[in-house]
Image (cartoon, rainbow over the protein chains, first blue to last red):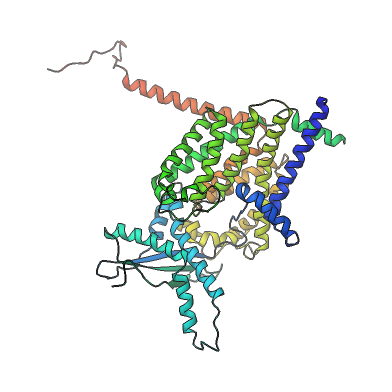
Length: 209
Length: 312
């Protein structure tokens, strides 16, 4: 093969590979519904090494500040006041912008997001039937149980238990969690943020007192 | 056909941006060292056995039973690979080791990592492939290096294009409120910025549109002068703001680092020379200071050494 022909072959092969590579990645980003099967193939190729989930506050910025609160029960089962690791970590993050606190604060916020997701899933999966449950108590209870038994709650409770152990100096008897959302007031309204919260049932370590 | 031949020649005849490749590699390694060292004080919280669950993918080795306590070894090996790579020691080994270990660390601490870590992961991949190809000569090696260089550029364009289009399809960004909401949340702002922009402002609405316009135009305008330099400067400003005001330092700095892929080879060579000179000057000054502190005191008038007085 002449050098010119070799160059042409390598060039065309390289350009084809380049085009196919970026075409597959573009498909995983755009996800056109008409090409669902091709997207699945592109996902199998691109997801392990070239995952492209660029959020950059898109499509919507967060419209709320999240908080994860917990409280610890001591050996006698008495509850300490509610506390949140978010405020302290944020205060440090405000002071030291390029330190580890910025990533550390993402851990309780991650648990908040996961529990919020579990609540949304429970609300969607467990439908209330007015005919069999007119006051909705059984339905609400079933949803609460689903959230309580979710992996998200288990993980967050473990996180809270470790923090309680550090606070109390020994393993807590129980922990309880609460997720809070402080909504940002729309521009121009100057309102105080509205707070919504969801309080989970306590988790007892070694049985309820 | 002529065009195909010309493109093939462009790809295969020579590596088109060796200085850009080298500068980007150094900056990416430096970023990896900074980002990892910044996390080391709380390493157990991110990668330890009690860290939040990992991504569960192929690289999430540290989540597997028995592997979790090995995280300090992985972090140390990753840092060592980045330092070696930065100083040009065992370049190919370091490139591959850094690529694999970065994926392992990101997969384990997936809950706290952001787009910056993912972008650097992509750059590490293309840089590693280019580094492996650089050991060889010939049209195939040149083509691989040039395609890796191009891929790094396209990667940035895809990222901005996807983010810009997604923002434009949303509700708050086209309404001019995107930055207002970002700056009013506790986790992505500073108390001073929250107070300054409480209730919103025209400046913030304008800045929101500038951000969308920047992201949508970047994939088209960044390829050619005279728009390239101002666009990169604007991007650097936006990302420094993201690093320092929004508090996503690793992401903001990662993007500033990634912009080096859009430098020309001459610019990359000049910047690299400047950084090396600065490093040498700092090292020289440090050495001078160290030797001055160890020198024997001299008589100011005659310059002769003063013998130390030994008290009984």
